[in-house]
Image 1 (cartoon, rainbow, N blue to C red):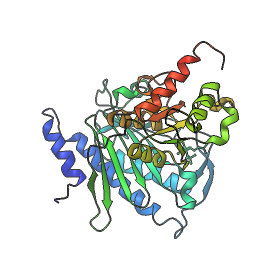
Image 2: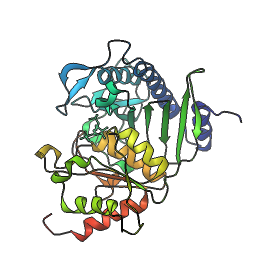
Image 3: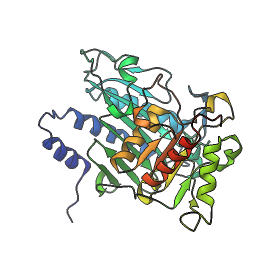
Image 4: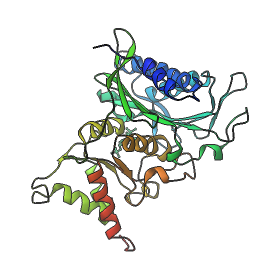
Length: 340
Ligand code: FDP
């Protein structure tokens, strides 16, 4: 079978769009190169001094891992030079990252979580880079402002992730289906391995950090009890799988179906909207989920419709197969108006 590289795939799709200029392909190519560099270093973790913490905290108040910082630096360095961006934002940086004047600019904006799931790096569990691409409608040749960037997920022109694990996988969408590519290390190319990925309409797996049960609201507790009920509609409980690395948990959900949840909880005020970030995690994965035939919701509303108020906003996330996400929404609507 002839093997299609990600570059060929991009060019093919570019040809199908008469207004395409090739600038988007340049952007993705640069992102892919950054992903290959990160992949190379993730694979060396344990051999070189790159595991462990840097001794600093990020904007989210979390301890920064050395590989986190490395991945962030690689992405900023490479993507600034892509010549097609007017601004970037990273989960690791407090503010918008401008493109310096010495580099050419374009109207695309890139948001990313450089190394999601990084608390798992030291124990060899999959981690990944999640990205979201927007277009600046007000682009005038200079930069992007915060208000240019605070756009709802429905306006993303592309989204995806690169997962570093037993193999390195790139999964992306430009609004025309979801496609997966596996890095062949012998030739250094991502080859099409999962064309037109679709999420099964219903699944058999639920995925959540159940240790937080006592912090959840009633609808979340009710739905999780429903998944565990041996006498429920399915006549058997769902299976529980939780890796604790969002990219890996989402990737499994995309392939096998079911649901991944990170609900709001009342542990502390910072988690009252959940832990995951709207712009770096929930929105890009929601675009992928919907493009694959699934759904993504806060329990009360569609993730892609949320207009962000700040770059690091958090949001409860229920994502996966239609059947399970709908079930969650039904449960939440039953409690609408009640203090839960
Ligand atoms: P991590 O803290 O390891 O970076 O958003 C970050 C994230 O991982 C997700 O990848 C993961 O799904 C979640 O946090 C795990 O959080 P809990 O430890 O609270 O379950």
